[in-house]
Image 1 (cartoon, rainbow, N blue to C red):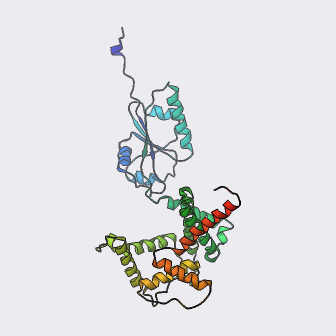
Image 2: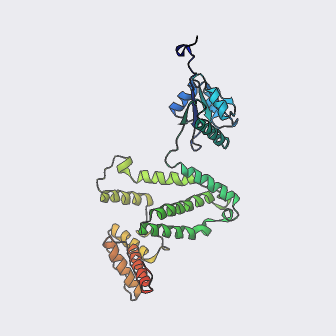
Image 3: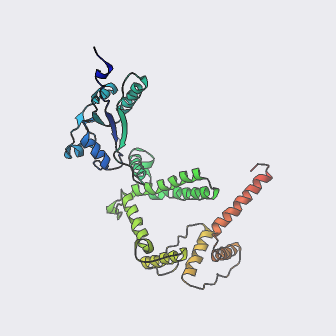
Length: 332
């Protein structure tokens, strides 16, 4: 006679681990929990014989089976409290996870524990790698993008910068995020073109990594109070550090060297006034009549008062635009 006490206990359902890894992190750079799980697993399965992690797992002594089990087969493989690790390999993984979900929802199968284990995580800025890859492909495959030059793109850089400023002044964060992306695209696009430099024409190639490396070095060098032994307790002291370091780097013969004359007039006038003031030069305004000289005097006065004349004029112009719209009967 068989009693409940003598009935065999049901087999433990085991554990399924789906081990994911960021494609933006070099293969083999897995977290310690991932390596522990791989080494302790009863089976490690991968449907993709070319999976980028495989050489590193084999080198570490982890046996990986080339297999693409169905959901039911995977559940059965876990019977007896066994742990099976699956390395996702692409589109087929969706069918597997859907199948596991259907089995779990049926209520007719004792399901193993299911765990999603990230083997590596994206570092901050990882999506920039995606942007570089997308730009590479566009440059090679797009009939328009493949023909662009630095000079041809210059106007777009100006337009995108103005649109970014407008988003900032509007206080629209969604627009700000988009416009920052558009400005970033210009940087990556120009760097991609520069990568194709022609040494025979005196154009040494450089890449986005060179661009990033240059600005990293500059930022570190110009922030000795952050990366060195100098100290700066106030924004004013930081600015003094910055200006002093720039002066040493640039070795300018004139305070006006490096001021782009193609920038908007008010911004140009304010920049020149700022250079003169920082150089402790008492330069009288040029004598002359007409609106240009009046605007110059106003721009210099604004800079001395700590006001950006370009931004101030834009704010006034926006108010004027609103007044025009109100006169036309438009709301808002």
